[in-house]
Image (tube, rainbow, N blue to C red; front, side, top):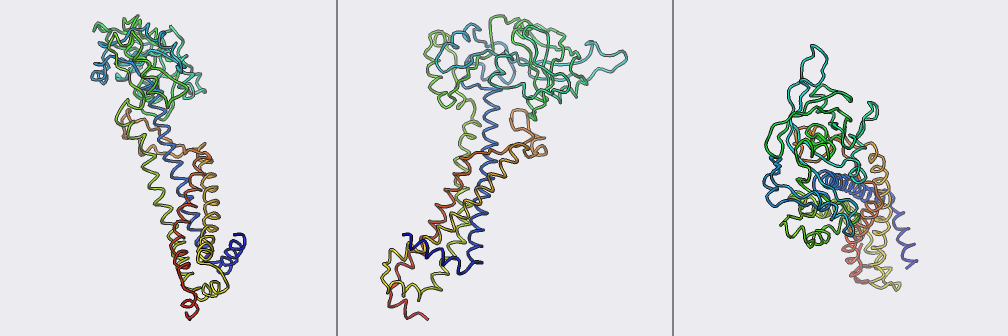
Length: 423
């Protein structure tokens, strides 16, 4: 086999320009696959992470009726607050916490604005009462705080609110200012509460930056007259891929079954999640197609080489090389081009992804018109991992060698007597 590899290497060097074009084609195909897979994986992984952290958790427990009333931010269908402590004792649960989602209208009127200052138009937002300190260990919401203005998470029990940069801009407030929140309590009574702006979020997500207002969980419970109830309980696990199994264990808890609560793993939180979970598999077929286009250059080159070297093939056969050896010789030529092109393309693509995984790509013009429910940030960060590099490298070799098989098989089938008569 070593002899065949040396012969293949010498054959490739005989026509350096042709070999270079073949290697370049494989390089470009693999490079595009690494970059495309890095971008797609980065988009899908970040979208799933945002949805898990901000919406579904790894497992979500609600009343069955809450799903239909959730868009209205209804407070009529709640779960017992004590259940969270009970579920926190289950295996593979790193955090069990309640949330209260409610409708709120924010304004600066009567909130301590400077004399003569005009109050901003009321801003409708989704209020979220959450244990921000506990959740931050998992969701890392604090990474979006703008440090330059003294932003921080609201203090437990304090009448404070965490707002997004766009919401604060619309209201004309800064960190340390006050806003008035108008809400309806669980009993349907209107209530006004003065909240200090503790922090400013700048995430690139419309849901966080413009449409949400976070307050401490106990503060929200007091404002809404919900001392012992949440609209939902979310569980976080160190093993996200076993969420369905965790959901089954939750359904086996007596108090959950007795209350007839709905238990939803993150994989079934919405149809969009189900679809996004399949995106990587769908794109894998596209990656194969991209590499196949590049490998077509190798196929054409080797087909032409077989036609040009027909007489030479006959001489090799007459000297004792078997049809299998001749076939292996041409496969080795294609494999060398595949390995060199795939290695260079995979490493170049990996370096590209690594560089932009820190800086990201601005896609604000694409996401500007999207609603907050589409959890796509204004900057896209490719995934930079050895897994992506190895995937593209192996794919490039496999597809290119497969493309080289057809001309190699043709060469192996040539009869020595017929090949030698070729002019």
